[in-house]
Image (tube, rainbow, N blue to C red; front, side):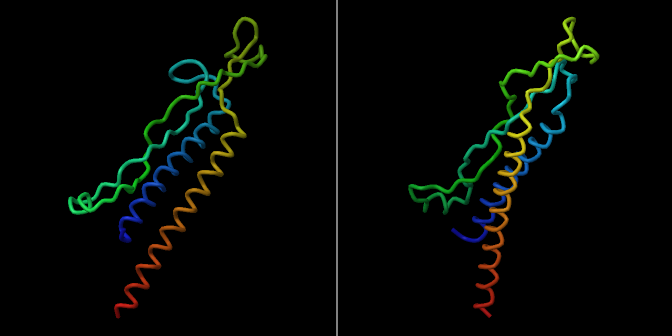
Length: 144
């Protein structure tokens, strides 16, 4: 595995974690949205990651071992299946005849934990990229 391969793997993780962070931020921003364009309250979303074989050149494919290198990608963004919260608020314009308002199914604590986890994963991959960069720079220094 060369430096560019390590950078490609970490780069794919950075992109995936950024998507997860964006979805968590969107969920938090819409935690109180009771009316959407589709109708009804906002539905929380989750990111599904998938391992994807690292695409290399033909020679790399022929020389591959049983354990193949993988990158990560966002396979899908799916709606959370949790039920909507029901709150009694007869003064709300979105309340039904009984005064019940259907609120989004966003769990704020869960979204905050997801954001922290995405940030830590992002930082870990930045650290890996820095390590690869430092190794490449040292290799160039040795060659001088």
